[in-house]
Image 1 (cartoon, one colour):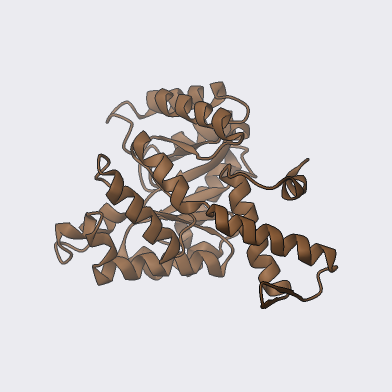
Image 2: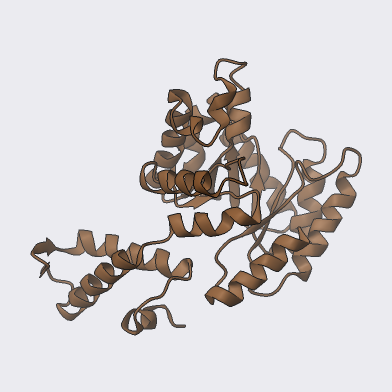
Length: 296
């Protein structure tokens, strides 16, 4: 966890902005019987992080005996230093409501929730879960999702290639992405476990972004971060075109324009502005005329 926070600080300095979140883990990171001590540790790390750091915590599931204690300790003491709380194994809106109530009781009334969708039933309810006002993002939990099928999905469905070809896995990913976009939430793609295979990582990130509509992705190793950023960030040519169109639209007082032989109006202006927003968030180079839009 400390190494991840250090890497985040180094890349923030490199890119001029914080380009990835660090999620401190209680669900799989805490030893059995040591949940309270681990919650205290992640709280300490969150409080000690740099002011510009983006730090979150994955707590235990809502039906785990340590869930309420996790929230009371972590959100109760460090809510103002956290970007969100990640809740795993969410099955329904009722689970979201329970997490929201726990946050409110801890005094963290404004802290967003990110949820992990990890079962067929949760995928079925993804639109309802994404509609909840407190939910900011849905993540897909690949390995638990495959395991939940009792062997009906082969182990290859968890691989970097198989997760993009098995119909049930692909369907789940599409449902989650669609639910997020329907309600203005952020779809976050699952991990790639072959962390030493940079080519597989890059290919998976590009498919998640360009074929399935995901705008964020989990990493489980530092070597995966840069390929994910490259895949999720607009390319230089896309930034150039978006900059030209937005500046021309502004000069025309947002009336329709012709650019490189194509008609553009407010619908496409929104699209190209979103390209520039993603470029800014991911530390891409922007023309000086565009940078001023993002100055405080």
